[in-house]
Image (cartoon, rainbow, N blue to C red; front, side, top):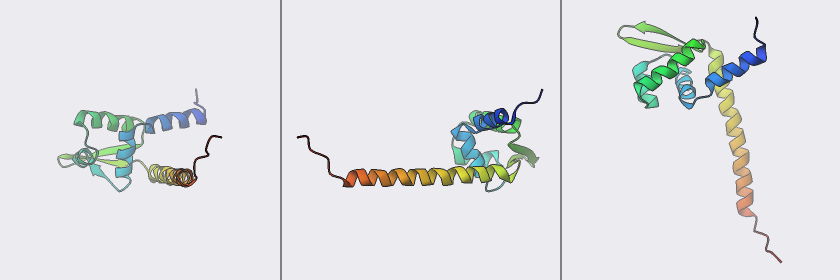
Amino acid sequence: MMVPLYQAEAEFFRTLGHPVRIRVLELLGDGPRSVRELLDAVQIEASSLSQQLAVLRRAGIVTSHREGNSVLYVLAGPDVADLLRAARSFLTGLLASQAELLDALRDEPLARAA
């Protein structure tokens, strides 16, 4: 039985819906990283990182391979990095407009009760 595309997309976004996974994917957007490099950058317990990497691997978002004594992780394709850049751009614009609103609220005097 084939899953509707919107359902597969929702599952994909649920997979992305964890701050550690987002941070790992941002780091991998710059190129392959070893587990040690990811641990140093993310600063969580090794077991927690391992769980999050396993989720990303099962979803096919990242792949891994052994290089010497290290396991390297890499994005399965460049589209994930593009998606994260688009999300960051969207959030930057959203936060900028909220900052403008906040500035306007700060600049406007309070109306006095009559």
